[in-house]
Length: 226
Image (tube, rainbow, N blue to C red; front, side, top):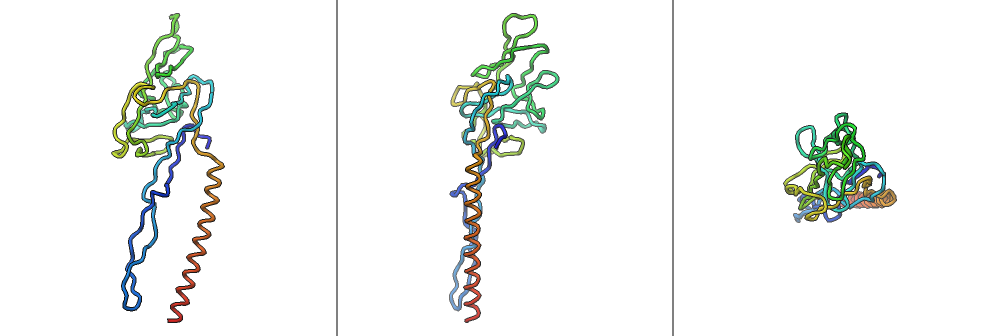
C-alpha cells in the first residue's frame, strides 16, 4: 500500500471459467457433473494511484496514461509507473536498484537545479553557464492494451503479444500523460477495501465449506440407504 507506483494483480468475477465435466452414472442413467470453476485470467489493475508532492527533483509522476522505460539487466525494456529515481555515481538517472532510465540521461558533475518539464525535458544549470542546459528528454511509452503487460517483480512490467508494441513519444502527446516533477504516484491499493474483501472472502469460504460438508453427508446417507 505504500510502494510507489505499485499495481496489484486481480482476478475479476468475469475472468473465471468452468472446469471439465465429469461423467456420472446413477443406475441406468449416464450424465455429466461440473467439477467447479478455475481462474481464467489474472490481470494487473492499472487504476491510477494518488499523486503526492515530495519536493525531490528526481521524483517523477505521470499524470495520465503511460509508463517510464527502464533498461533491464537482460537487455529488455521494462515499464513502470514508479518514478522514484535517483542519480548514480557517474550522474546517470537510475531506479533505486540501479536500472538506467531510457533514453539514458546523464547529469554533468557539479550541475545544480535539475528540473523536468511537463513534456519530459530535463534541464540543469551546468558550471560555467548562466542559463539552464537541456540534458535530454524523458519519453513515455503507452500501449493499446496495457492490461496485457506481464509483471516481473520490482514494480516492472514487460511487453507481451497481448499488450502490443509500445508507442513511445513525448509526454502529453497522443494520449500520453504529462510529467510532474517533484511528485510521486502512490500505490492504488486501498487498505480498507482490501480488509473488507478479505473478510468477504473468508465468509464465502466458510459458507462453501459448510455447503460441501452438508452435500457430503447427504451423499453418505443416500449411499447407506441404497
